[in-house]
Amino acid sequence: MEKLHCKTCGAFSMIPMEVAIDEEQDEHAALFDHDHETRFYTCHVCGDNWLSVKETEDEEGQCKITFVHQMGMSPVLKRVARMQTPVVFSEDTVNRWRYFLDDQEIDQEAWMDKLAKRRHILRSICTN
Image (spheres, rainbow, N blue to C red):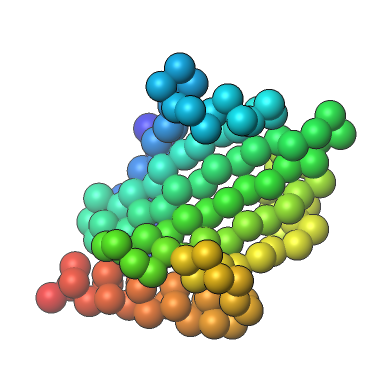
């Protein structure tokens, strides 16, 4: 398993894990008639983590990727990308980003500020 660079503490300790959804157990899985892929990323040094969910929504390959960052119980930082292709994720393939604090849509600057504060707190905890 390849370790990735953590954007919070700087260590190469971010581990991606596939998340399998048991469709027989999950009542919401039946609602999705499209492909989806879920990964959980966690840093084994500072504890930073997020969940990414990629959903292919139609036959033309349009897809949506949702990133959910949570520290404790709240707030939940979420950003959603609409993409033209489910194969390659880059800024060039993203049509539009939407940013949320819990369920309320906020602007990018406020979202990035909240994420920076979250990462600052995690970095402070692991370096003290």
